[in-house]
Amino acid sequence: MKNYASSLNDKNKFLIFGCGFSGKFFAKTIRKFGCTVLTSSRSENKDPNSFIFDSENNKLPNDNIFYGVTHILSCIPPDKNGKDPVLRVLTKKLQSLSLEWIGYLSTTGVYGDTKGSWVSEIDEPNPLQNRSHRRLNCEKEWIESGLPIQIFRLPGIYGPGRSTFEAIKNQKVRVISKKDQVFSRIHVADITNAIIYLLQNKDNLEFHQIINIADDEPCSQIEVIKYCYDQLGLKMPNPILFEIAKKELSPIAQSFWMENRRVSNKLLCETLGYKLIYKNYKKGLKNCFFESQKDRLI
Ligand SMILES: NC(=O)c1ccc[n+]([C@@H]2O[C@H](COP(=O)([O-])OP(=O)(O)OC[C@H]3O[C@@H](n4cnc5c(N)ncnc54)[C@H](OP(=O)(O)O)[C@@H]3O)[C@@H](O)[C@H]2O)c1
Image 1 (cartoon, rainbow, N blue to C red):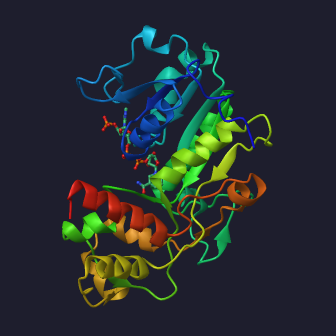
Image 2: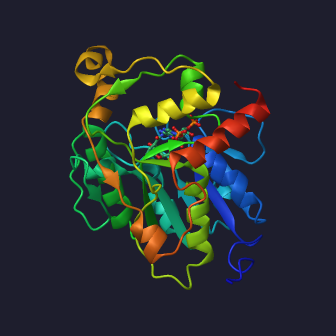
């Protein structure tokens, strides 16, 4: 057994840039280790642990925010020019700190279309979409910054409050069939727990700068939607063929269907030994369903 109490504790101070869906989950969890956690927001709010950061409007954190910071997690997507919002305005500041670690949440979109084949960290990125070119550029900026960066490439993120259950409830779900098309996914709790696992074991594990965090079982969207309808005791609408449905999809929605890949988690789960909490969408969605029942969302 590893000594989990040893590396994350009340001596650590985390700044989380971009406290949206994943950032919030991470902040909530890492606080349980006794770490100090401050989170950024673009708008004023009453949370005493929140600070203002808005790269577009040049609203930067006060210097005192950085005092004693040991760890940073950035969950902010690239800006429209493909620059990283944090690095664009804070590189010098970050370089002046004694940081132990920076995590950057990236996307598996950088791999492009593999026509359904498995893709891993040793494969050359081959972005198809402009947004994925921008993302790859941000990864490069982080790597070239000389900061102690670790990059996590993520497929579709879901979790309590953001899953197919909410899409069904809000009538946002489209049942589309496209032959042999699969998507990879990850439950938000596994993003957080995988990162914590790596931080807790950093002295025992070989360091990898780029790591995919994905579940074990990429599968079609229809399989996931059908599972949710079944859980809700509802009948799934008949699927529409992609070729017909695409005329009504937004360009961004269409672009997701242009890429077909299975994201490998072997580095994380075999080489580095992380055990997924939710190995597949069924396990992950059971958790979402349970949490939504608790909150009486559905
Ligand atoms: N959603 C997915 O399925 C998915 C899949 C793969 C990768 N990713 C990537 O993984 C990361 C985390 O995803 P997520 O879905 O958890 O993110 P999210 O909920 O969309 O949160 C993004 C955060 O970034 C902040 N932000 C955006 N632009 C900013 C700027 N110019 N200056 C300061 N803050 C800014 C937002 O601030 P406010 O809180 O003030 O709005 C928000 O808190 C993102 O980079 C995302 O693109 C997402």
